[in-house]
Image: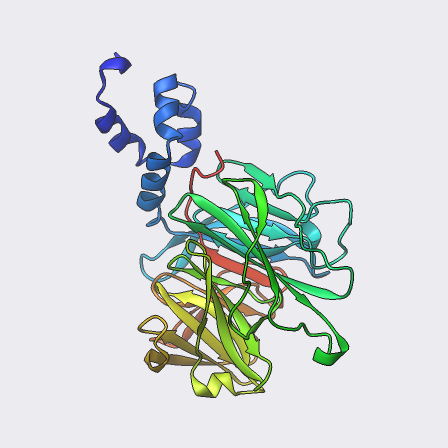
Length: 364
């Protein structure tokens, strides 16, 4: 009877189901597996699933080691809240405790253990899909200078299928204060070819991206890093288009570009590029209303860092800010009421990663 069921109708039904159910259904028949694993179905399912209310959260223990990933189901009925949480196991054999999150995109998480305590015999970059419980460990990069250097990673998915990791390698010399000279050497890993490829021409923008201690923001197929223009000591954003493999610059508002005492963070806020400028007293939240138009930067609101509030770590879809507290790990801030609500998660408030999460079938 299944053979007579119209393929188009079957796809419309299956695309509404969760990933866990779909992975089981691949065993029903060859035709079902062919549908579920097709590129068109995976893209359609991801688009349909992007409306789900879920947060990806990493928790660091008090020894600053990454010890847990969680998915949080969010409820917005009567205000932002957490309905349930589920811890997810990290892939076996990868040294997660010394890892940092490079970025998240389309249900995939990119992790790197290149920053601290690197074992030279162990590969250091991994792409992981928590929903299908599958991961890949990337081959060793090809650009490995013998002298001091800094490597910065970026991660994204082009056209919801083409998974890439970009790696910027800055050589460090006494002339640049060992902070990295521009331009860097650049190489790109493509899942399609399963190889690293050097980018001819490299970066044609005189910016030095900050290390992966700072988060990236992936928006409109473009990776965004905080960066510094070393000649004039000006802060900016280095952008890399994952599809076209072209670098560019996104200028910051003047008070953030030149503010030496302001700590910056780049985010996606309500599907726009956002920047947070923090001092010891407050966090200013900015959004770029028109992409790559410097004059369109708009300051949305300011959060006073009263006693107990440590840092701003992310944003929800409707613009609420997610904060870390000294006693509790995570709280939500409503910019309209200026009220903070504890969400009841414990951990290290100084180290964190939070992002909006959607299940996907990529890597299945």
